[in-house]
Image 1 (cartoon, helix red, strand yellow):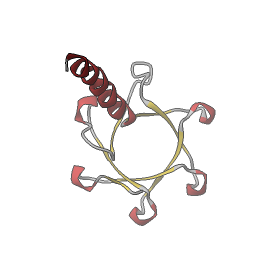
Image 2 (cartoon, rainbow, N blue to C red; image 1 turned 135 degrees about the vertical axis):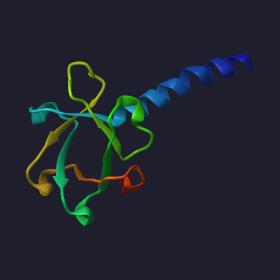
Image 3 (tube, rainbow, N blue to C red; image 1 turned 90 degrees about the horizontal axis):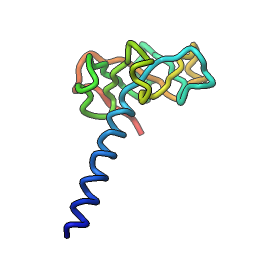
Image 4 (tube, rainbow, N blue to C red; image 1 turned 90 degrees about the vertical axis):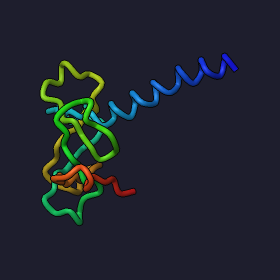
Length: 107
């Protein structure tokens, strides 16, 4: 039983920190170093993610909420994104929403 408690105490923080860092993003200028190419749309129907931008790292509570880092050097664990001009070039088509409840990732 003690071994199971130790195992769970190790795994739970790792899973939590992974999901939090997945919602922490930074836009970079080199497309070849980016994990995803993102197109920001003003048309909600063409988006596959409705994103609510939060103001701090601890404000991210669920998928669809992004903290866009202002200083990429301080947040090396943030996911690298590259902004593209055409939606056909994008891995993610994002639409920014104004309320946290509207944030959604479409599967």
